[in-house]
Structure formats: structure tokens, C-alpha cells
Image (cartoon, rainbow, N blue to C red):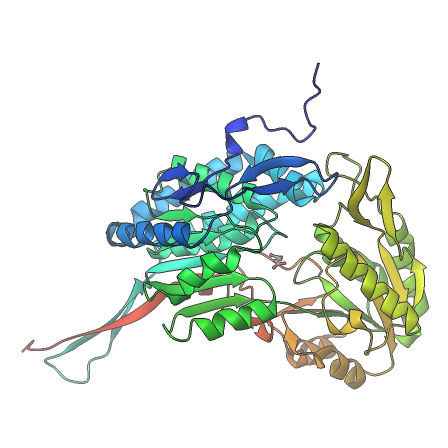
Length: 499
Ligand code: SIN
């Protein structure tokens, strides 16, 4: 008798393994190529294989999106909203299966996988509501015979490129505003985690998203440029929305300049987390645990550098180490797991490099500091939750995102000194600080050079809040009322001859 995998789905047909182009599930126009294998990072077992798409698939997806655009754009906003609401309802109804799928292909603990499904759905529901509120303006006329209006219009076909760390939430918070605005979409989900995106697309079809409005092409890391280059070069793609690394974001900005596309770039972070001596230390430790260890530290807004004022440094570190050392590391299929495997070998190799570099430059390992091997999955990429103290600005872990469960702690003396360090990075996505002094809260909140600030709070993201960065962390905002703007342009209408 075969024992079902603990993350097996109730609805097996939600494991979809083909491109979605023009309303058809298809192996693609480059079906002669070896498929792209999708592995469970917990034990490296094969979950499924999807097509390793290329330029021909990208072109077919774009043709379908372009053909579907006029009718989708012309549909009353209320009707688009109704379809999005049905999509939201289906996502929520399949929370359990989608959560299992996320955990299976991405590795996060099952409770987090299920949580991500609701997080993804919250964007779909929010933008369903926003679709009907995309109001224009009547502008006071400069002349009695004229009337001036500004209306919002969808930009056209949008290319969406998403990362592996939130396989449902990242694609939902791009596709939902695009569809709400009246745009059509060509999307390329991350090569490590395409199955969740395909399952979401299947539910979108069931919700009534018409053929061609949403198209998905899967591709390996090697073939991704082939797909994306088609969309970059084509003037019919009017916008690109990308979440991922800063070098790739720069490449997309450079290459889309020829066709002057709109861009939303949610790029790398290097978030500081500051604990002032007037902070509630227990709340600060709690906030750090939530912010840092969500998704095993594989989150763009994760604190990457922790600064603690000297007077409370030891007390804070003792409390933190006790909490971090107690974290349970294991596969998503084990309900006790709090930290899953890292996404792949490259990810764990980077974490190892950062910790080795820090230790070589004088950091002290207070807990963790090593790769974990499991007898049942010797090649899987687990890393022990780690606290380092005596971190310095020249360490690799202070200069770039570690993207893993490592907390490097430095001490500081003055507010001015810590602000200089916190802002002394090319990145500016998120920052966090803990203080109970109201004057300091305003000063520091305003002085931090980033797009998102957590004040006495570690859990920041919400569908109604604007998410995005400044400097090398990119531009554009996702979620909130601003999230729709990026998928629209403003058209000015001037009517004369009125009297
Ligand atoms: C990200 O890591 O890019 C997204 C994190 C979030 O939505 O909180």
C-alpha cells in the first residue's frame, strides 16, 4: 500500500503542469525541450515537471493577451470586480490545498503556507473592491465653453515576473490590480515554484477570467531571459511588474527603456532593526522573531541588520538567543516545524558564506551557525537559526541580504550613529525600530530612508497598505489605493463648443 505524501492535495487536478495560453492549457510550442523539474526542497523529491518555455511560448502568450485586451478593458468595472471576487472566494475555499502546494514546492511550514493563501486572497479581494472605485476627475473649467475631465484607463498588456519566496502572494498582488484596472497579463512564475501560480490560474479560469486575459508561461532559470526578452522588446507590453533582485530590476529598466514601459520594481532590501534603550525589550524580541523568521528569513522585508543600544544589548541578546535556539527546524510536512528548508543549494551556500565571513571578521556565534543535515534528506538545504553578535558594517551579512535565518547584532551608542548606519546602504525597502519615546518615534520614523517603517511592530504587510521601496530597492507600490495606479494611465478629455 502506498502512503500518501503528507502534503498531498484533496483536489489533485490543482497540480497543473502546463502553460496557460489563450485559455488553453498546453505543453507549449517548445515541447520538444526537456521539462523543468519541480522539487520539494524538504527532501529534493520530484513533485512534478512543467514545460521549459521559450520565446515562441512568450510570443503566443502575448498575442493572446493583446487579443483579449479590448473586450476585458470594455467590461464594466463591476463585472471585472465580480470575477475577481469569485476568484478570491475560490482561493479561500481551497486554502488547504493551496497551502499544501506552497509548502510542498517552497518549503515553508504548513501553517505559513495556509497563511500565505489568505494573504494572497486579501489582495484579490481588495483589488476587486478597488476596481469599482477607479474614479476620474472633473476639473474646474478655464473657459465657459469647455469642460475638462481626467479619466483612468488600463495601460494594456502587463508582464508579471514573480519570485519563489511567496509563490501565491506575489503573483496575486500583481495580477489582481492588473485585472481590476482592465489590463491583461502575461506572467512568468519563479522556476522553483511554478505550481502554486498554475493552480491559482486554474481557479481564476473557474472564476470566469476569460480566455487570454491571464496567460502563464513556465521556464527554467536558463530559459527565463528568452521569455522575458520577448516581452521586454515588444511595444505592446505596456508595463512590467517584477519582484526580485536589484541587478535583474536594473536590467529590466534598461531594456524596457526603448519601448518606454511603465515599471513596478520591488527589489532587494537590507532592512535595519533598531532597539533603543527605551524600548520594551520583550516586545522588541517578539517583533524581531516575527519579522526575521517568517518564511525562514527568506523575505525582502526581513531585518538583515540588528542594532541594539549598548545599555540594553546584553539583556536583549540573552532573550533573543533563548527564543532563537528553541526554534524547530524541519520539513513542512511536520506540524512541529517552524523553519523549513531553504529554497535550494545556492541559497544555503550564500548563508554559509555570510556566516563564515562574519566569523572571520570577528563576529561571535551565540546560537546556530551551521548547516543542518537530515538523515532522511542528506542533500536538502536546512540551516540552523543563528544569532551573531559583534557584527560590523564591513561584513557581507551587513552589506547584502542574507535571505536566511541569520540575525547579526551590532551595538550602538547614539541615535545619530545608528541612523547613519541604518541609512548607509544603497537599499531602502523596510526598516524597524523599537522605542517608547514619542518624540524619538517621530524623529526616527521620518529620518529612516526607506519605503516601509515598522514602529514597535514586526508584521507590516497588509493589502490596504502601500508596499515598496526607495533607492536600489526599486519603485512603484503594491497593495493599497496606490497599487492600482501603476496599472493605469490618466487620460485628459477636453470638450469644447459648449456655449
Ligand atoms: C517579499 O519578500 O518580497 C514580500 C514580503 C511581504 O509581502 O511581506
